[in-house]
Length: 124
Length: 256
Image (cartoon, rainbow over all chains, first blue to last red):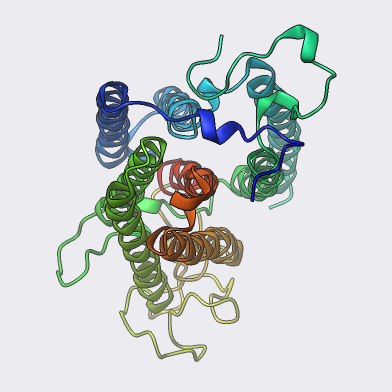
């Protein structure tokens, strides 16, 4: 049944076979990138476990994992979920509040966790 | 500005009606809002895990000591199985994107093929997670069914905080010179592991069910007669979210 009181945006979202070929190529490139990043993380995880490296190296490795994971997340959200293709406003409405909130939450949790760890150490 | 996803709108007709905010349909917008709320839930759970991990650094088990098994083999293969699971989920995410892309070309056969593969990938992931749980609960002695206090079962009740001792009652210290508890570390480790991976596994399972329902709708030609495959796209958003959460769970539980 046709509704004349709303715009059905999906009816205008189609693309041709030609454009489809380009889009599929991009999808495979991003897939290769995600697989490569995961492989690197696994290899580092196997050959540089916590108990074999120094304190400073482990801190670097932790940041390395987190940054790689955020890169992976970014590609999944922007390319696979097509958020990069949506209106700019929608993209930022989704990403900005979540990012700010999560960063602050992580800051709170690590601060409290460090304090609690200190308490346990001193009262063992 | 935006690519093919949304058409431009004349400013004159901005308040003329028929428009949807962000030029996205109601269903898609609602799915995004739900995903943000679910992401906040998982974010809360993972940061809680980070807190426990950070506060009890000494006793926390190293993942590549706990997850070393590969099905049907007896090799010591740290993290390999989990890497396989990550790869399977990423591949199922890729097949989902390809299904959405086929939907944008009104290619019904393509959608069926790629959506079918996504369902298979998801089912394999859920099965793999179940095997991982089985192995973890069974503990180092490999005996799943020993729930008694003398077993090393990782369930909540018997992964006791009793200090590990050798035959003569002397505490066995770990690499850092600390006393160790239980077979798999503090009770909290098992609690967090089962809760977070279980919650995520539940999402994957429900995602598989949703994908099956959408696949049936596609097979019956419901999408084609509507003129668009937006339902596939919305199911795809949920599926990618599930993959995204796994990427973070994988990093925080198995790598860090």
